[in-house]
Image 1 (spheres, rainbow, N blue to C red):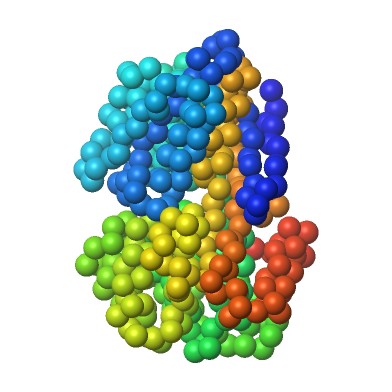
Image 2 (image 1 turned 90 degrees about the horizontal axis):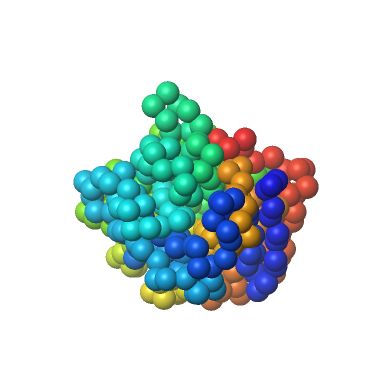
Amino acid sequence: MKRAIKLIAAAGAVALVLSACGDDNGGGAADVLPCVVSDFGGFDDRSFNQSALEGVLAAAEELGTDEPRRVQSAPGSDFAENLSAMVEAGCTHVVAVGFQMASAAWQVATDNPDVYFLIIDHDGAAGPEGEGPPSNLRPILFNTAEAGFLAGYLSAGFSETGLVGTYGGMPFPTVTIFMDGFRQGVEHHNGLHGTNVQVIGCPSAGCEDGLFTGGFAANPEAAAVATNVVDQGVDVLLPVGGPIYQAGLAAISASGRDIVLIGVDADLFYTDESTRDVLLTSILKNIAEATRATIVDAADGSWDPTPYIGTLENGGVGIAPFHNLTDRVGADLAGRVDEMRQGIIDGSITVTSYLD
């Protein structure tokens, strides 16, 4: 069966209906038991782990399955062991959340060809010799450079200091793709409008030489990096890496200055109410919908391992509404951001990323 993707627009969200489940399970909800394993960020990260869990829970409710199994990986735990535990628990579909689980997902999927796996944020080519994904492992990827570009353009138009900042957890492609898309959007604004907005934390293309906390926790290291960026005079801050945005939020509060925050993965306006007064927007990956729809579609008895890549065009990525800052953004800048979105979709604006 060829990959099937149906896009259903509703209230600013897009439901992604992806093909799923095996060809000998007879179909039907009774045969489906969805499960999920988080990375070290945990299911309360208000980011991609939480979004994946929400997708699994929504699918289970819709299908009327048994309660989904879940494992929250602790630092130092064995990803392969956690994934194997899901297989032993009778799971039919196992979601491995995050690129750090790629090699473990590849191995456990290879060892268990009758169980279907999704790997979030990796292309699945994680075998010992770089082998591509086995036929029962489907990569779910998001070209967030496109949405990051919109956030960067927005930030350049919004900034009054001419300085905007970003920092990440670790210099992995799934982190730097946000930061570099943001940089590209700022530079595009500078070229179009003759501005000279600078990006602190991403000094060159790719952002591999940018500022990173060394992990994905809101710990003292994250606090130090966030404070460093804020102290350089930025008035827009983009942290990339699950809970590390909380260090940025604290640095904004401690500064006493008018600084706005940009979230990633999920809309922080809904996942963390404490951000609402300073949240400009969020760079979205529709992980929950992609996960939910993949599992729900499992009931049709078909499976297609073709990688899914979320883009602006298919609704897999986007930016959140401006919520409480809508009036400050203004209709003119909001309209220009929408023009940038259309330009990326129709190809008149080029955004580069490692997924190209």
